[in-house]
Image (cartoon, rainbow, N blue to C red; front, side):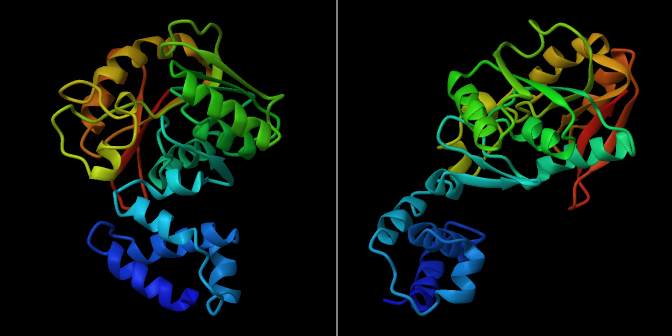
Length: 271
């Protein structure tokens, strides 16, 4: 079968389990061929489909995330290696970097702290945005820290990125121009798509019955962590702006809300 026909057949098969069936098919075939999606669509539509594609499609049909199958996810201006055991970066999380760019304007943060760094998504994106900055990423997952270090090495940022084991900011000293965090914020009884619920690490998703437990742990430490003129930017669920904003205000900081591209509240900026 040639690529053009395989794309149509795979998209049809995936339509029942994915809202992005055609895109999924394109990414899987491109991965099987070792080319970019753009190159696939421009140059390889009439090429034969590699034998490896059938196994990749079978994995996706079990709801395994595309990023775990391909081992890659684009985020902000970088591409990250991802895999089982770490949270897959989402485009919505780029809202935090956008908020940081807006906050600092023509200034540049020098010191960055990323709490719950996962594969290093937010911190490495920030280090790419500001080449003069240094960063510390904290996580309690050895799998996540190993992947974050590998990503820093691959992106040529190892000299500027330090990754440490820790429980949020409890073992972190000093002040930072920019504090970033995408903590778990889903309530334990909230429904999730199978590809998230059954594959991504629960400790990176759930935070108590109301989804606020991680904020209760992180926010009281923010006043001692934020350098003068700096900011902490926390990702939130789209119904959590008021609750997280109240926690920030209770810590004697000023909260502001940043919306994502869909118009949903996505980040709280604490100053």
